[in-house]
Amino acid sequence: MNAMTKVCALLALIFGATGAWAQSAGPTDPQIAAIVVTANQVDIDAGKLAKSKGHSKQVKEFGQQMVTDHSGVNKSATELVTKLHVTPESNSTAESLKKGGDENLAKLKGLSGAAFDKAYIDHEVAYHEAVISAMDKTLIPSAQNAELKALLVKVRPAFEAHLQMAKQLQAELSKGA
Image (cartoon, rainbow, N blue to C red; front, top):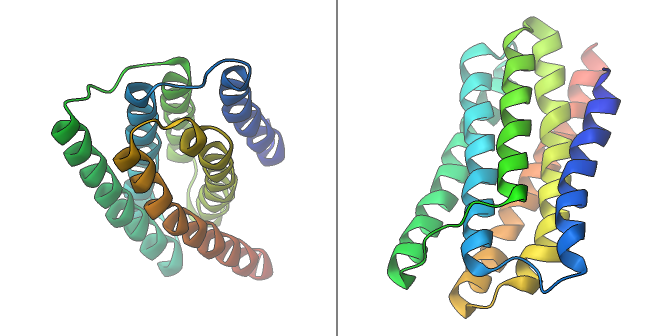
């Protein structure tokens, strides 16, 4: 499966899972909490791998940035759900994100050098695009608790910044190839 097919499959996974909610009332706050924590953890895990296995300095630095930023979001989310006495509730979207993250890590572990960098950054672009879309179309509109909604709105610009950084790095890697 080539990179573009993988990206399309990832996007279909995210949009398909969130699309089912578009016909219903949407995910509940506990389900949103599980999705947020899982989405961040997927990127933390990939970032850790990029930090240790990345070929270029920029990819290693980007990986560290993902670990730092997404760990901060998860810390805020965990503090909020603890304060609200909400237990994150597993759901098909969170499970799909975890499965996709595990598959991506397995693929990345088999790569090295420039091939690793390209695959990691290509995935980061697609992943951040999908997560931003899910936030805009499903998670933010569905959040019932004002503090949860505010947290999602607050962290959204960071996801957008990550996407722009990943796209820039993707362009730089393409020039160097």
